[in-house]
Image (tube, rainbow, N blue to C red):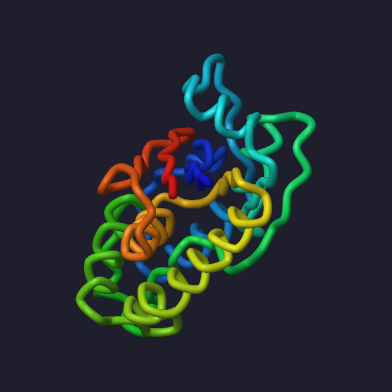
Amino acid sequence: MEISLIRHGKSKYTEQAQITCKDFKKWVEQYDSHGVFEENVYPANTLEKISQANIVITSDLKRSIESAQILNKNVKTISLPLFRETELPDPDINFWGIKLTSNVWAVLFRCLWLSGYARRCESVSNAKIQRAKKASLLLTEYAQKHKSVALVGHGFFNLLIAKELQKMGWQGKRKSDSKHWHCTTYSM
């Protein structure tokens, strides 16, 4: 049995203007609603694993669904919100109107989230203990039934799933590959 975790492609939403922290929420909505860029070449391992998978799962976000279709034009997927990326907090304060790029806000909010701040979003403990565990159990069920599963998901949540799979005895890289289009496979 094997489970392959694949990160979606690079989003078509590339706006990098300086924005306030309040504008960041709108930026995330735009990022989530856009598809992904097609590439000239994809990692051979990723193409192999998605073509050999007996079942392909995605999150319900456009960039995940579209990435699976790009990697395998004939693939039929099961799309579930369970596999969405972990959210970032949405603070009430505006940080004095400071403007930064979306990448800087994302790093700052991810650090806040990892330290326990989770205003208007799922907490880090819920993402790790509940959702990632539930996701890894579901992937294991699919692997038991179908032997080979590919998940086209998201960088950070794939990392959490990988940790849970390893706790369950799945063998593979200690840390899943979080580069766009890359794949890490775990076997039992």
